Image (cartoon, rainbow, N blue to C red):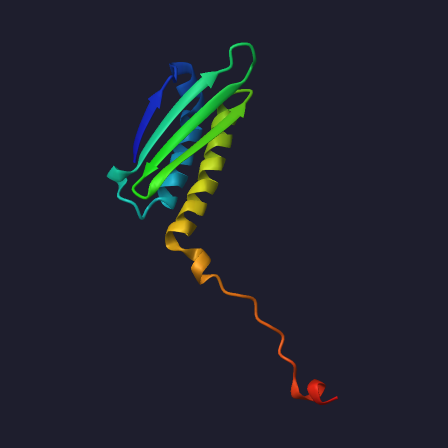
Amino acid sequence: MKITYSQVDADSREAIASDFNRYVGKLERLLSRYNSDAVHLHNSVEKAPRKVEFSFAMNLKLPTGTLHATGKGPDVRSSSKAAFAELEGQIKKHQQKVRKDYVWKRKRGRAVASPKTAVE
């Protein structure tokens, strides 16, 4: 997986370094079917000018599509956590769509009337 950053200063990068490695490990497990050279993750952090709020944006480019997630929070760690949680859900949904799980979804079994109750 190729990871790039933009608008991320050194202080913000140090704050999210340990969490970021754990989240990337989770994403790599989810994306193990894809070639690692074909997966690109782009991250950016923005601070709201008059608020104490950070916005963490992520773009994940896969061979089958592009996913985008954002997270907002009072600090960089909480905003990155929200963005990764959103991206993880999008990846799972995207993989279900690619596998066409909706076609193979089994219908619920019907209750069959037994012969004794049908005669009565």
